[in-house]
Image (spheres, protein in one colour):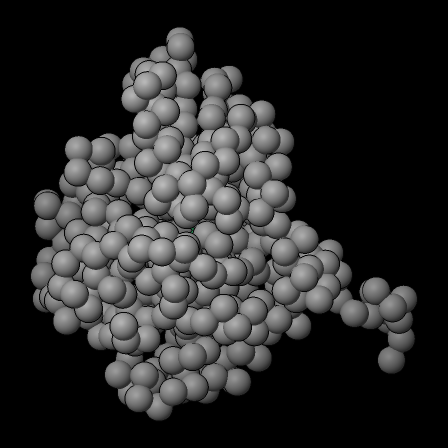
Amino acid sequence: MPDFLLNPKLDRARAYGPELQAILSIARAKEARAHISGWAGYTPTPLHDLPALAAKTDVGQVLYKDEGRRFELKSFKALGGAYAVDRLVVKRGKEGLVVTCATDGNHGRAVAWGARRAGIRAVIYVHEGVSEGRAEAIRSFGAEVVREGHNYDDSVRASAEAAAKNGWQIVSDTSWPGYEDIPRDVMQGYAVLAMEAEEAGAKPTHIFVQGGVGGIAAAVLSYRWEKYGADRPKLIVVEPENAACLTESAAAGKVTTVTGDLETIIAGLACGEPSILAWKILEPGADAFMTVADAEAIAAMRELAALHVVGGESGVAGLAGFFKAAANPAMRAALGLDGSSRVLLYGTEGATDAAVYTELVGKTPEQVLIPEQVLSGKEGTP
Ligand SMILES: Cc1ncc(COP(=O)(O)O)c(C=O)c1O
């Protein structure tokens, strides 16, 4: 499998027409924004300008949208799962409603959070690779956690079977034939991220965004595609090398499943099957697909930590992909990255598992957030 691929099916001239608008649209992103901004504690997450990284990579600007500050969940997933739960409650009513989903951690946390707010029961499926810290965080929102299966796709099937047996409602972040409405709501919630970035002044020429099943990548792409058409920024999807179902799909020219353990520390992106709805947007609209190794993600976490920004393993994958492309002359040329490029990164999670974060970075999230001089008591001294 290639570690970098310009999208062979890219159709930049294609307008963002009704077929795509039926999946995601700016009009519905505005509705999502109006709803979500009514939640207690809502505030747009910070957009960090990181000139040190721009200088290091020889581009004009690097912006990093810090979802580590998203509500109490520390990930953008709050915008999707909890929004879909709210929409479901409006449509179905609370009576007897039980929601379920599979998760690598963050989506389940969002669904559990949404269910607690709505006052309904949630049963969340995790596979054996999900850290106990992440399972515990889901329980802390009152949900039941069931551990089943070897990888994410196994736990998707397990939750679907349990839903069919018990009459529960699946609130999944991925879609499959015949199951599209709820994942569409999830993705529509994610589009709020793109709106916030734009309102904060981001005018990117390039967006590097991580891909699990493709939902967040499709959401941020759709927003700018519908708004700017062929003048939109280039969008590069970045995946872990051992779970690169979107890159594989682009290379194969059709939706392709990656099997096996999907072994990677980049836990939130360990997905083997693309979301079919997301793929309908990414296949004609993403500019390139690429992969990163675990070590590259860890290096990116440390680079950010040095700047007092906390990014989790999955949250920094786009940054890791950008570092890799910026340092490689062929990739730089293929993407048109140069000294005038303005790069936008969606830092989709903070330290969603503090123990894992500390092990990988060598400092706790709190130590990273606090400048060295405060830690050493030397603040204010020359
Ligand atoms: C932190 C983080 N970033 C990115 C993603 C990828 O999102 P998607 O599966 O919609 O591609 C996930 C998915 O769980 C995640 O947890």
